[in-house]
Length: 292
Image (cartoon, rainbow, N blue to C red; front, side, top):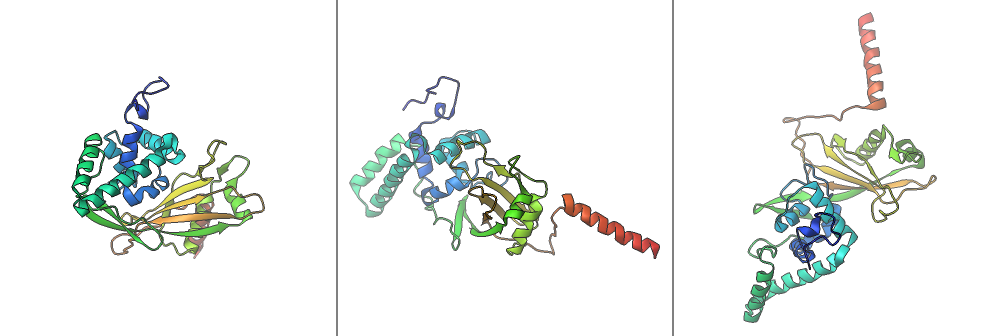
């Protein structure tokens, strides 16, 4: 396959790599391939970590790790362009065959590996490194390899429901955007589900346009404000509910909670109506004290 841009409108991702190279790089993730679609293409504190899946793929492709590249690769994989998923399955089978041949001491298999390695010398993973771990589930601790050191993280899921009236209070159907105090309502739902982190919510993303049929209708991320706590929350709503239907949100929780009052304490920042109410209460209390 040619590396040039078929449209002739300047450089794109295919001017830097081929689809075969991308397939081999993704296949090197092994059992973690299914997690690619759940990792955002945006660059943040979490995706800049060495165990970022798209970061690993980009590292094997030896291209710049920036948001533009992440977005391009994420779109190719998510939409299944250029039969990428079929090519990845083929590469995974080749890698597994090579491993089995080495384990069995098959001379012919060893020769076959060397031919493939000459064709993909910079993309086939080093089989001397630890093999990819089992995929993350609600009940399994995933071990991510970071400079040959294992970092364990617990990933599980919870859900919460907004009634039609609560969803109406949080979301404007007219303007197709979240209202000012939506984070307060979401925080109440999280705490009622047993979440103890004083979280800070990131931007809410609402699906726009008919072409994005595979996208979630709503998603956002929340991070614990305690510095020593790495826990993060991915909150999403698959489809927009109608006027009389409740909204079911799924919350994917990543990493272990780490709270120690002897080291650091934190509270969620008050905004909007809650801040105004607290201000009024404090004003009332101070007025009473002054009168006494």
